[in-house]
Length: 139
Image: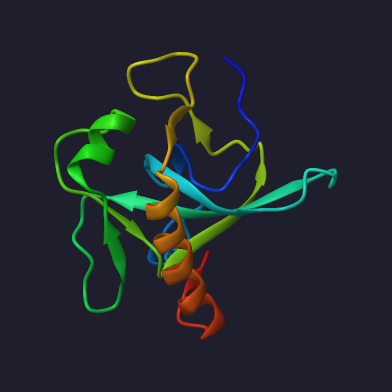
């Protein structure tokens, strides 16, 4: 199955590199669900995307995240553990890129689906607040 166009709210499997990992000299991490917050115009030859991680780790005082409701997790096919979209840290990458991976139970499927529009707008607004105030950390 080919990769879809990179649209905001798309949830896919990605090798998200946390800032602490990059600072320690790593250039890869573990694959996890992640979502696209922003994508460049489709007219650009090299599409760029801003990627937010989805994690089971509850946000700490240094991070900010929005919990995915159970119904959204189930609709996306994520596991039953609580998870958060972290909006205080992000990666910027090309689309497509080598960090995109197939889903654990598939050899050809890369995406879980899309976040509901209202939830995505909340996530995007919280990310942009931190990005605009320079409180979001880029790897």
